[in-house]
Length: 137
Image (cartoon, rainbow, N blue to C red; front, side):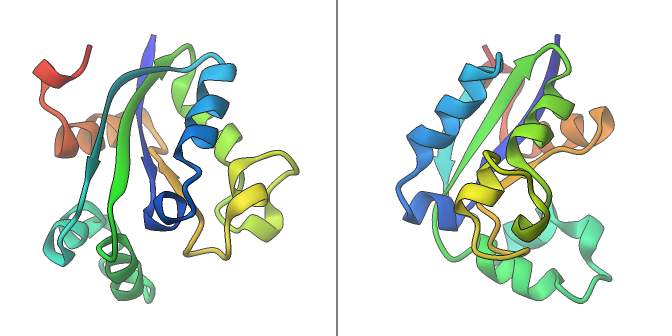
């Protein structure tokens, strides 16, 4: 059993497709172990995306992630990280496969509806950013 963090970004919340996205995870064998709706401040977004601090998109990404509420989830299941990333699709929706979340709903490479951890180490850090162990069932 593996855990990963999944975020429905402000654009996904605004489009009111939360249920559709969650349904795709559940239909593909992932279980929600924790879920909540939060609003990241610009400073919170900067802390969460600190790994991208030197990238040219850091400021616009953190602006975007703090412009509205997000849904954060801990997903669990067999190979949850890879499964989640397959369901999401490529970061750039133009390169995502048909039927993936990003291909079906994303506007562009930055406003791409969802985020998912890319490794077990990242998942552990990202989950701890949003959830205490008491919140994960």
